Image (cartoon, rainbow, N blue to C red; front, top):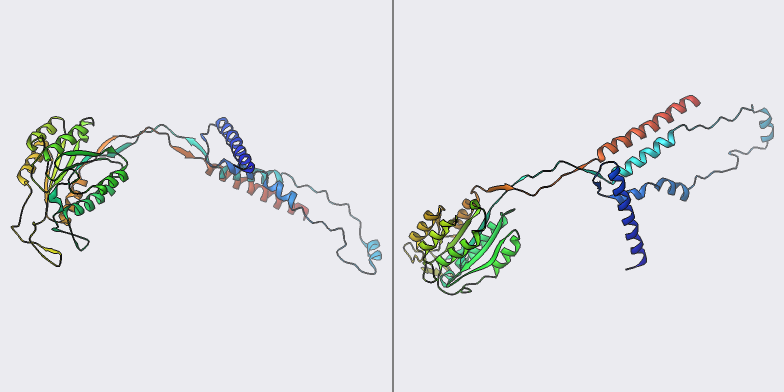
Length: 359
């Protein structure tokens, strides 16, 4: 670090310390931009660097100047009297500089309510999620790609919420705990792949794991959104038994049965929906899980329906809880701006009054 930088840092530290002492004297919290105080001596520096040019030469030379001097009437030189004009200008400049430094005062202690949710997202990564029977941005896509796109958009609207991610296949895994860092949740979501947790589907284990993660939260904040396209084929817990466990710890489970119309037919890679095609998910069990836990059950056949479901869940009444205690900072510079205008007006009025007297 250069000597100039060290000197500048020391000067700023001294200025901050001095401004803090001044603020405490006047009952202020401090100054947001104390470096504006360095502008206080600026008029003196300008006057020293750019002094007024005074010429001693006569304004007009004529050959008979001597005779004109004898004819001129001698009058006593007027006494220069500027009054308090310079003082008013200095006060106006000082008030302007202090106003620019933004003096602030602490207001009353506040604890505004914060509206937010705590929720876990459970995503199926079993082998059936690779079925290409959906469309995404006009192109054929598998179920997982569509689910990721909709959930990512859902996360964009979770400002202030805490979200955790559970993935499940043959087993259930917690990818992220409940966190306000939704960007990390999105990164973990995008890093998931089909078969990461196995090829089968452990719906009951996913419900049990998410319930375990949520049981430490306040009762009204325990929400799980579970998306699957299959039936429970693996794991330790039966979905109904896991739902009873979730109910006992106060977790509300919203279930989403997700899947297209099966393999069906395709033309140049574009799936053709065939009504009555393969239906892999167990919608009856998912509805029962939602009923037991006090949640809602949904089913989606395409991206539009899935997006609508997450929008519906988004409209659930958010939980209101006390936010962080804080004391707002109140700006006090408007009073100093008014003072600067007042002192400047006094200087102008005094100059006008002295001008009239001399006239």
